[in-house]
Length: 281
Image (cartoon, rainbow, N blue to C red; front, top):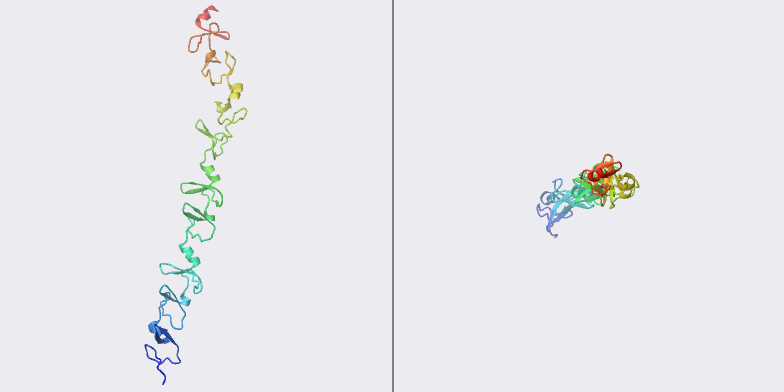
């Protein structure tokens, strides 16, 4: 006599029939579907004995229901991301959802794509553009002003000081004279064009001159000694009278050599005299 082989629930004889072993119990497919089958996390229907079942972290799916929640790609044999909110995504959609977002377009910067990182922020390479000219900066140098990013040429054009002489931006170094900025190469003698950075110079009518050129080409000649009045060194003070100029130390009485600076004097032809000597001439 053959031993009975019955369904644990309905007691139907299972000899020659399809059945499922569940927790060491033999169950007919009808009872399994009704009483034992897991519920699909996606469609909420039972996963019957005739269906292929997938499971992950105590959750179950029909094979056809195990798809990316974004693009609906079947994931039964594909890598996938299980998010904390229970959503299942393919690798690409998961990266888009969780990845860094571009500061310009706010779209996800996919791993491996061309991008720029600056101060813990990220941009697509084509989105990292100059605030002024809107061109991608890529491998060029750049500067910032507040939150705005500029390529070097636009930054210089917009913010750099302009040379008083050539009116072009001063990008590095430079010289300041009378509160005006100059390129070092622009700060030269008006006459000989010698560079005046670090050298002695003087100015005349908004032009600058080296000492030698100022003496020969610009400076007035002393009416007494006939040498240039440069304003350098000894004799920086000048006496002017009726179109003539003297070094202060040359403005002396022709006869007694008394200094007449800030004193009364008498002009006699091309000579000057103190009042006492003028009476004797």
